Image (cartoon, rainbow, N blue to C red):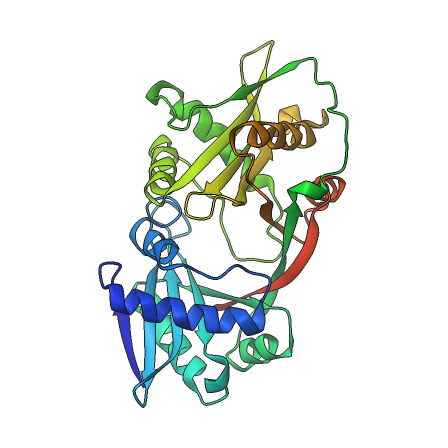
Length: 320
């Protein structure tokens, strides 16, 4: 089997990578929308916040049989590498997945990473694959989707001590530090048994995130709750609308600073975000979100908003 890295400038390799991913999605997670070449290029060129993933194609007998993605952060968690392995369904159980995984684990080892994480949709196949390669399950993530036309009628709770601010798409330099402090509140979300450290958010990471998604062709909407008495940023919610498929949107972050919890700010922010999207992006029909299964508070908010469970992802880790 041959393994080659995919460069975002190589249109043919990107096309082949997308074909492998979509072949796996059609069987493993058919509710996911197909990956597009534009979306794939954005991931490989810009990543989430300026740390692009590295992608690899596996070929055997002249056929593309699998793909892998390798992700690390330049900001934090220097010990960790995250790996995704996808095998074309008709090419499974021939050792291709094991070879691709070994290739990525060796890359992590050569970079001095000491923990590798993989994930797979809930089912006996991914669980067995993880176990045979020495990975232990450490967490469960749940993918939920909101169909906007099914949004229940909910009153907006009153939050007299706070004002909601529709944030600019590009944060002014003078506000980046405060927004970075607010974004760090996401570290309070449960991580279960995962070997992860708190994520670090310097102001330049916020700017890199906004730049990356703009370059990927998405429109970011950030709604912030600000405490009237102190001016402190207390909470936020962020949604990205897909510029290529503008009927689709994705929830990126909803978090509230610990000192300001207990005022239903999470629900208020998400409800007001839906109102804003209705004004600016009335064509949006679906909004996807991900949460740790143990994140009871945010799951409760999402259930009030009518989100449906689409699938569960098992997160595994092992030491290198």
